[in-house]
Image 1: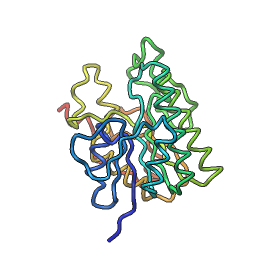
Image 2 (image 1 turned 90 degrees about the vertical axis):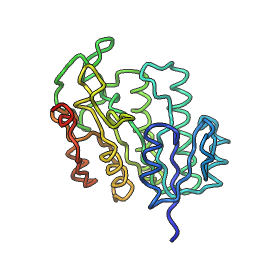
Image 3 (image 1 turned 45 degrees about the horizontal axis):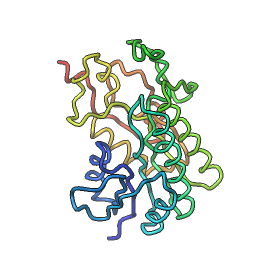
Image 4 (image 1 turned 135 degrees about the vertical axis):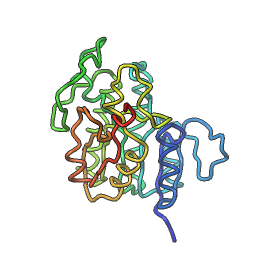
Length: 250
């Protein structure tokens, strides 16, 4: 059986490793990361996505049907130059190569930091213990250049859907921990923002399989006290989160 080709950018990161394993039974996975793989991984491409020609070379070789775009500068307080290069220019290059080489759909790893200032204003970010329920219909309130770069990419995704028909699902991902456990955050914020591994996998799988042309959704488990609305993900992506961080607190 021939599986559809899927590119996972930032494949060596925490979420990339989770998804590579979880999707390998249904997709022909190709990995892209700026760093060299240490695992002698099949179908691995070392690419600086901020370099358009490098990115074109990889995409023209693979010709994927789907892309999960995780790569980027992950530091919330990262330097502007790094964010510009790795989150804005690189994401534009991914979308441009998707247009050139016939990608059907992109799952974009956006961030809750697009609306981070609903929780407080830096330097007292996340000081508001119980912010109002935030929905994707609320105006963006980025808390950093990082958050603004993610908002840019959401707008870019909409542009490429409207102009070129490339479907995009933008997931404003919550807190994914390596140990799949939300207890290590002393502020207890993670107990509300945690996204378990199996809920992450379900959300991404449903996004890949959905007929939605363009959408923005919060990626969070069904945590007691969560303050991001997931009703549109439940309705449009058939997302049914299985986990609640509060079970770890008992």
